[in-house]
Image (cartoon, one colour):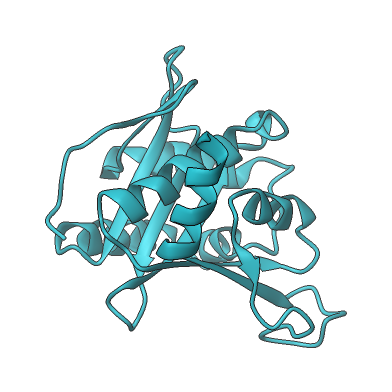
Length: 188
């Protein structure tokens, strides 16, 4: 996939390609007291690796192995979060991830922006499958993934650890065909 400057519009947001200038808002969101310290981005920040992670994912975007959108509100607030797609080992399967500054939690923006990104993946990028993972304790993210139409993979199993552990992860996916069937049924 060739890098693009396409902006994806939602009712309340504009999803634009992320830039290095989004680093300070990223630090502010992850550094907020409400942001769970167990999440991977918080861990990268503690290790001093957040800037190199952002540089790396932006470089992946340039060569078509990732698509990272920063979320700007139509009211003018810039980079209140990000939504990304990163290519898995299989070229037609991509991982979805998202974060929002905690002051924007609970208003449906994660679902709105991630749904637009999934739609973009399947209709513009011609991705064949979208995957995502969420910590077992992170029920908000799990509910968001389910609202997006992603289904649990091996629903009884967790990855990385025992299900009681704080780093236990559940995985979810949806195929393009399944998403197209479901989304066309919603519009009827």
